[in-house]
Image (cartoon, rainbow, N blue to C red; front, side, top):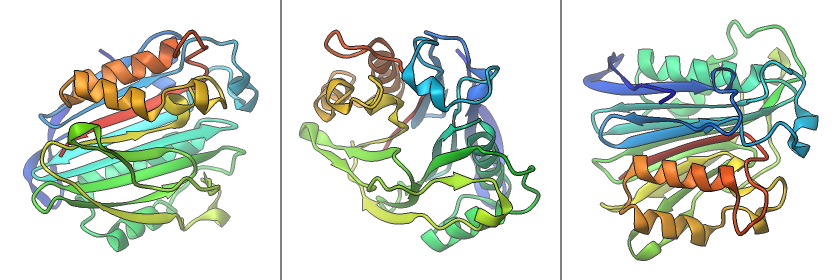
Length: 271
């Protein structure tokens, strides 16, 4: 197991919190999934992919860190905080932003509104590392189990969806062409905000395109919504079993097609 969840106290949230931050630089062994359970509600998986011979590698500039994805989860009381990022031209942007989001959620508490989340993103501007070529997608989600409501901000082509009973799938965020850089002149961040509602028994999925484009840039021969619905049904919506099966399918490929041709970051959380 590549990530053991730690039990910590979360800044302004009085309840005990469970958290994990998984950065691609720590998960660079091809063909391996690092999977962690985060408290009672969530699980996460990350992988560099299946092979070093992949068309996605032409967008990577650091030979020592071929895994440019990153994720974090903070579960405190009734609130869940989830983030995934998929960088290219170097891991600096995804690793820096996810690390700082994780730290902010732990020290300042989970944002309670889109505006508070936007403020947290804006605060990342302070003390950024020197400018690099690296840029990243970024998807941040907050879910309140007590009110069955949530919100998020999205940059790029990562996906957030709610999977309900009777295999109901609801993609929530819209993919867009925005990317995020750690360059000071590109912050503060302005992404596409969204809101959603859940029902008891729903499963929340947050993932980079290493899942639905595991056959690189070929979504039609990658993990499709019906594959996801089938996995969630077979695992009865268990977060740990779901991330294990979903990430495993992305790693090995679908229907005899290549898989694992891009980095994978995946979070599953029960509503």
